[in-house]
Length: 360
Image (tube, rainbow, N blue to C red; front, side, top):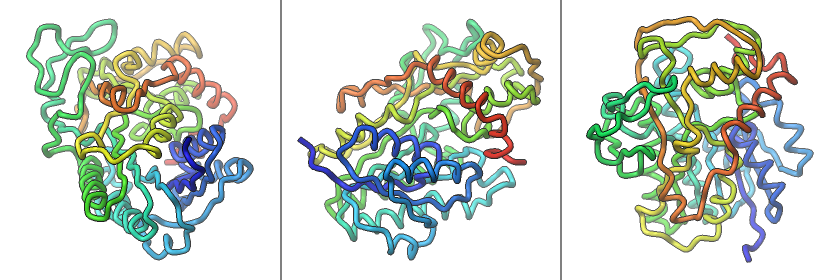
């Protein structure tokens, strides 16, 4: 039986951090501690609920090493703090230096904390560590309003109809965002080896659920449903303006069984410390299919068209989580339909959510 532990979550008032904190408190058995700098619009809305649940909260900026000096010791750190946008550093909202300071410098500060307190470290990474060029060149065919790998076509190593697995190339370009996460992965594993710390890297597909901040570059499912419900402008961008581009979908709380298993795991070989966690092919939806869902569940709405390609866009990204199933007996638990319904219910209950979480 796993002994009670203190779990520290960075970015605890963000969407992923707060969702994990709630799920872990509901599971019981551990003390939850978290910190956040509250710079993301909407993050402040999670503070009161987490305090009510007994999560001890600290104000701190991951980029400032001195902010971590006042944190209590912990047995495990879950790094859920990041600028999660693939356009970060190039979209004019965040400088490239800020992105690197936050996503990579912040990881270094957390790893130094782990070294000091002998804490385990779990990095929530991303599908965006995988190489853009071979993914952009995948042979795909549009069917039922969505791209699929072309049947019978030769796919690059590490890709199958089940998705992209951990052996797929991580060669640049992966975007500045992807590079910060890939470098964080490497540093985390090196710290683990050098200082004998348990370290796991969980590469996540698109995370989605109620309360996700409504930015197209950070949470496309929440953004699309909230924007559709408010009848604000939407566009299919790139790929001929058809909306056929596909992503998988995972609720963050579905990560909790794997996290709990990792807390108790013996030391694994380095390759087994990295695994994909995603909803997989069964969860995948295109923007066109998401629009069809919104039209049926919400109301009709017209989507504009802009066929101009955008940087880093990829037609089909689905992660294969069979390795996580083998290592951790893990499977996603929340169907995409339930995730979409949850987002829509939150959107109806919070008509101000777009303006609060994604101000212009």
